[in-house]
Image (cartoon, rainbow, N blue to C red; front, side, top):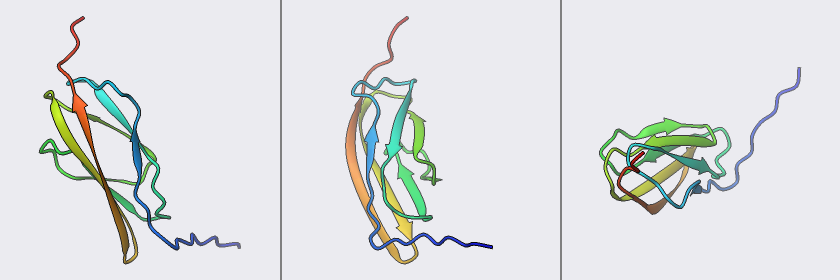
Length: 96
């Protein structure tokens, strides 16, 4: 039996937003580019929704209202952690 261990020297938080234009009522895609081994990722979308724990590389979130939001991602592994914050603008819903 072979066991692989994940070695993390430094936890680094990072994410990108897939689109430059984001609209209320439409899912916004985020890509988690963090380095945190088998740790945990905590997303705060700045819109009053609960903090979301996720370890997947991609996540979607729907903002119900237009406005400017500060998104934060905190990653942890053991006793190490890092956090990054970015602001995004969400426009009014597109009309069909």
